[in-house]
Length: 108
Image (tube, rainbow, N blue to C red; front, side, top):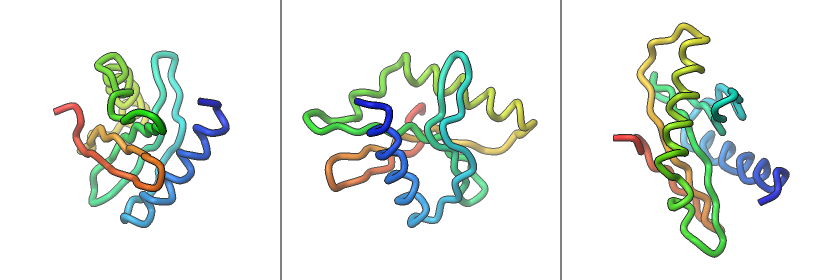
């Protein structure tokens, strides 16, 4: 997938999250070991959201154990840099054609 198409999907995901009551805190936070697509806040919980899409496959399969390890490490870095000990959740937001699904706490 091209970088511009990825950003367009993340824009769509961000707008959808706003309609669900999330406040967007950060986007495309980059560390040498990983990236956070969207960081959002809702109900006092920080959500680190990995956005995946797929046209010919279910995007849930793009979230591998290796990818999750990178997301967790990057989320820990994000929290550490902000000296935050907030409650957080690692989530997946799946974009499938016209539907969007949020799966919370994918690391449990």
